[in-house]
Amino acid sequence: MKTTNLKSLMEDLVGLGLANVKGVLWNLTPAELVTEALKNGEGVLTDTGALMVKTGKFTGRSPKDRYIVKDKITADTVWWGDINISFEEDKFDALYNKMIQSLGDKILYVRDAYAGADEKYRMKLRVIDTQASHNLFCYNMFIQPEKEDLSDFHPEFTVLAIPEFYADPEVDGTRQKNFAIVNFTKRIILVGGTAYTGETKKGIFSVLNFLLPEKEHVLSMHCSANIGKENNDTSVFFGLSGTGKTTLSADPNRLLIGDDEHGWTDEGIFNFEGGCYAKTIDLTQESEPEIWDAIKFGAILENTLFYPGTNTVDYSNCSITENTRVSYPLKNVKNAKLPSTGGIPKNIFFLTCDANGVLPPISKLTVGQAMYHFISGYTAKVAGTEAGITEPVTVFSACFGAPFMPLHPTKYAELLGEKMVKHGVNIWLINTGWSGGAYGTGSRIKLKYTRAMITAALNGELDDVEYFKQPVFGLKIPLQVPNVPDEILDPRNTWSDKNGYDIQAEKLAIKFNDNFEEFKEFANDEIMEGSPNVAQLI
Image (cartoon, rainbow, N blue to C red; front, side, top):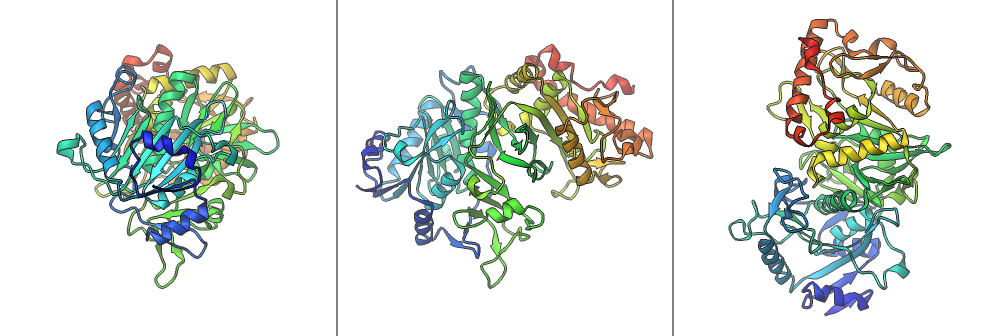
C-alpha cells in the first residue's frame, strides 16, 4: 500500500477494513488537493483561482435518502418519521462491507479535522474520500488541527464518502441508489451515489445535533452568528432560505462568527465549522462583497458555469441548478472572528419572509412565543419561485432546520427557553417579507428598514420604548423604531383593506396551529401559550 503523510495512523484504516486500497493520501494541503483534482479531471480553475466542479445528478441534498441506524442508542431517543428515517443494523453492515470492497483499486484522500471551535466540545473527525475536490471541501468546512496534533489523531466519528458507489435498493434497503446513513453506535457516516458535498457537511451537523444536547446540554443551532467589534455583544440569526440570514448577519460593524451551524454552551457561542458554504446564484461584488472576495484559490465553486469562451464565472447562469454554491475557509473572510467563538448572545433574531403580509416587521417574543416560533420555523415561498405556485405557500421547518435534527424539536426548544431565561436574552421576530398586503398586492419590506430595526435592537434602543400587542399572534410591537416609519410597524395599518388583513391573519394563524398538531403531545404549557389565538378573529 502506497501512502503519504502520517504513516503511523494507517492502523486506523486497517481497522476499518481498508488494508488493500491502491493508495492513501493523508491531510494534503489545499494546493496539493487542487493539483490532484485537476489531474483527476474533477474540475477546472476559474480566473480567480477557485476550483469549479460539477456534482452530477444531485445538486442538493436528498432528504428522503438520509437514514439513521436504529439501535440501542437511537431507538428511544431519535424522533423517527419522514425526516429521521430508520435503517436496519444488519443492512448497514452489509452496505458498509460492499463499499469497502469497492475501494480495492482506489486512491483515498483522508482528512483529519475538528467539528467545533470550542475545544471543550469539539469532535475529532476523519473523512475518507475518493475525490480530491471532496477532501478540499472538508479542508474548507471543518477546523484544521495543528500539525503536532495530527501525529496521534484518532477520530470520534468517521465519514466514508464514495460518490461513484451506488446501492442496490432491493438488496441494500435504501430508497434509491444514493444514500447518507448515520450510525451512532459505530460512529460512522456512509455517503454514496451522490457527489453533492453538502451531504457530508450536514451529516456531521446531524451528529452534533444528537450528541451535544443529549450528552453535553449544549443547544445546537442552524443559524448564523456575529459579534460587535466594540462591545463584543454576540447575536444569533435563525432563518430559512430566502429570509435574508446571510445578508443581515453580514454587518461592517460586526465580525462574523459563522454562517450556518453553532452551539450554545454555558460560556457562549461557538461555530461548528471552519468555513462557509454560500449560495452564489446572481452573486455580484456589490450585493455580497464578503462572499465575492472569498472566492479565490482553495475555494470550490459547485455547478456554476463560465461566460462562453472565458474562465470567468457567470453567476446568473442557473441552467444546471439555482443551488449554485461556493465553499471557502473562514480565513478568506476579512471580517471573520477567529477563533470563531463568542459570548452569551444578547439578542437572537428569528427571520421570516412572510409573503402573506401578516406578521409585523419587528416584534419582541416572550419565552413561550420564542419556543413556539422556534419549533414552527415559519417562512413562505412566493408565486413564481416554483412551477405551479400561484399564491404564497406556507413553509414550516422545525427549529429552522428540521432535516438535520434527530431529536424531537421540543428538546431543542426547551433548551432555548432555559438559556433565554437564565441569561435574559432578547428574542425578536423579524419579517423580511411583505407589507401593505400579501405578495402580489403589497410590497417587500425595504432592506434599509430591516437593517435599522436590527441595529436598534442591538443598540438597546428598543429596551424602553412603548409596545402594543398584536391580537392574533400576541406579538409585542414597538410603537417607534429609530429610522423606520411608524406607520409600517403595525402590519394591519399598512393594508387598505383591513378586513382583508383580518382574513389573511386568520388563515395564517390556522396554518400555524395545524402545523403544531404533531408537536403538541410533547410541548409544555409555556410553549403552547405562545400559539396564535384564532378566537380573537371570530
